[in-house]
Image (cartoon, rainbow, N blue to C red; front, side, top):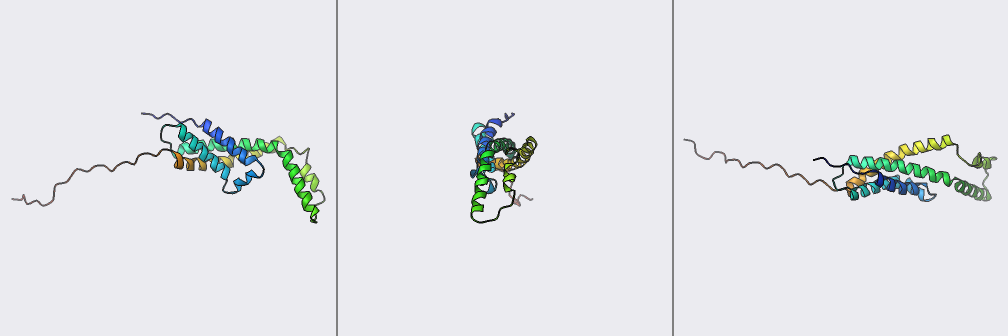
Length: 177
């Protein structure tokens, strides 16, 4: 009897989108400072969704696969949100530095040119390098979250009972003649 393989992509896309949004939003992304909370949680969420949609027993390999796909999805969503929110983040950084300089701290001479850059945009090469690095890190962490999620949410195999041993005849029963 062959078990049908679970469908990994839908749970991974849903959980990866959630983890990517939480990782990409300013201030909310601080949750990743606590043991990569959003990515591990996304992998566990994907394993939970997979366990709910799969009738069979899941293995840690299933959790690793869905966690890896979740990590890749989260990296793409995180990078796209970071690209879209870059102008907002640059204005926020300028405001923070202005407030620090108003408190009387000396700022470097050309600090404004560091934040403005070429129209405040990232080059495509830097974007894809960052996406590749995020995908590699998020994949490994997503695998961990998927394995944890399978151990928490998946159906367990029933414990096998020990093999029955036949009763043995009592030793030294006095039939010796």
